[in-house]
Length: 192
Ligand SMILES: [Cu+2]
Image 1 (cartoon, rainbow, N blue to C red):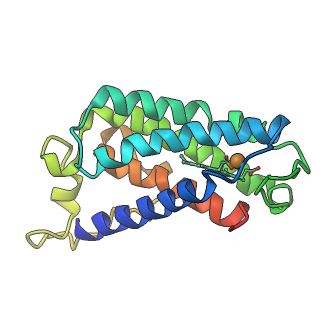
Image 2: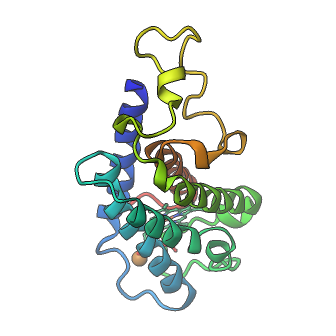
Image 3: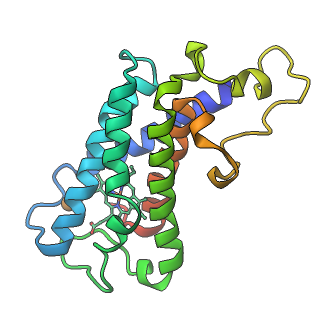
């Protein structure tokens, strides 16, 4: 699963880029813009804690993974979309007007974030794929040791809707979740 590892690296890098960009960006925000920035801030903080754990740089702690993914879930789905009333673009908001032109796509991403965050909470006990404790998604389908199935069938690209996230290694679900953050920002948030 080398490709997946590299991919996780890329996702994490882009999430961290978002985090760094926005540290000083939101002075003066009020009302619903401030509220959603604060909610995003909670999710950012959760990612900051989870990222080194998913990379194996700090000890894996299933309880922490569950708590932090529940933090994200609480700020996703409808909790996220209700903080984007039509046309709420007051400075210093970085939201794009496309949100309301393509509300279905926007709310689908918010919902997908909720689903993957809930999935990560459920998968928290599975641990990391590399630890050997997680279900053998990589072992069966991966590219190590010449898998008979050719590998890659269950790549990251396959939709989370098709999979039982609770059965996956936590880092796999984490990668999917991080992709949702990045995808929504790419499409609906102004690049600064
Ligand atoms: Cu802000």
